[in-house]
Image 1 (cartoon, one colour):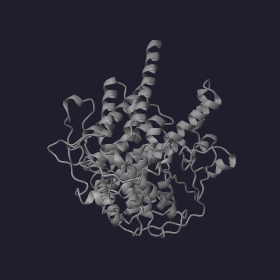
Image 2 (cartoon, helix red, strand yellow; image 1 turned 90 degrees about the vertical axis):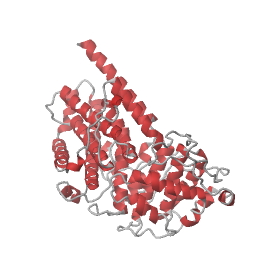
Image 3 (cartoon, one colour; image 1 turned 135 degrees about the vertical axis):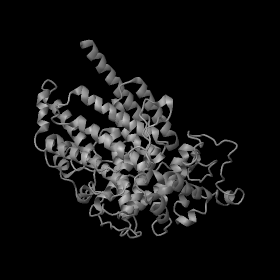
Length: 532
């Protein structure tokens, strides 16, 4: 099975209040000081503020069991139509959209025999069946196919081997460990319910609940089940799939809650990042998910404790594949995100403590290794960029549509080229924002950030790959705040709304953040104009 093993935890916690908010994983330093910890690793916000060593707990798992099932809501419906496929350009893109009459909806069952034979089964009971038994139901079979065709590519963004489409789908059929199968059906039913047919929502809830119990059993929280040894990659992959379920269902009130399960598995097992397998695919998906949430909500990234030595050596290697190069910039960006938001948090704290009348004292931020860390990150970004092969160059700069020339067109060959170039652009923006001793004039810095932002937007708009667009939500929401013209702002909002239709990605909060940032910019510009 997997090439890694899951150690038996020595301390397990299951915490959730009635509101569904999962407490964060507090560091030992905050626990001793009896203050609330934000759970960020490797250094939490409190420890950054008071400039003390952040001691992380060795093992501390947290999962949230959240099911909105009622005793009468378990019946398993048959969907009315099939969700849109990524490979169908004319497929409906909005929730509730119907297929054209010229294209008959594929049947979920075979009508009189499949529907009536299985329609009375309850979703909760079906979620407890072995995978191949559950797949005899036409609804479940169609949901499984929907994952393989439509959803798995989201996770294979930087993976030429298509591990989530191939390995995950095959291992999901293993009756000895149904956690992957249940995660797949939960995620697929959640997406399907938002795109086409809301009646399968109860299917999603039932399989989600069953999958959560599988993960808890793996951590020793429930009745004895299959040994977790050798299945670490499966549990990590299932946690990543459930994160997407929770994001799409908008069932969590805190963005930091989504990733704690995946963090628990990714940080307590050894993963050889120089190799490739299910555990590695799960790790890189987890890190991209963390970056998406971190950029969208202006918070640091939880980077699991792994040996990253091999990654630094691979940056200059000429033989590594392009998809692995995209993973390398993912790691560099995660570190850059942490550096930027740690600096921002500390600056805000110092201004609050010392008073806005003494901004010069914020220079205390620049003591110690801040400048050297910034230089190291800058060097890594430049080193990664300088060793890119020609395949990372756009194959065309021709405009995609005449009326969308607001964003520069950059046609790329593969989706990992899109994500990688967006990530390096975001890293460069963060470095410009957090430069500790830059002599670059503010106007020049703003101009560079503006060009990098347009580059991120152009890459997103030009390339139609759905996986790349899903991955672009975080970068677009973060850098979109730096767009200064109404034309660019309106174009970005329209683009994000368009991307959200086939993916059903929740964008309301992101657009609100963008509009708030633009209003603040307009006010600041108005004050500057009046003052001059």
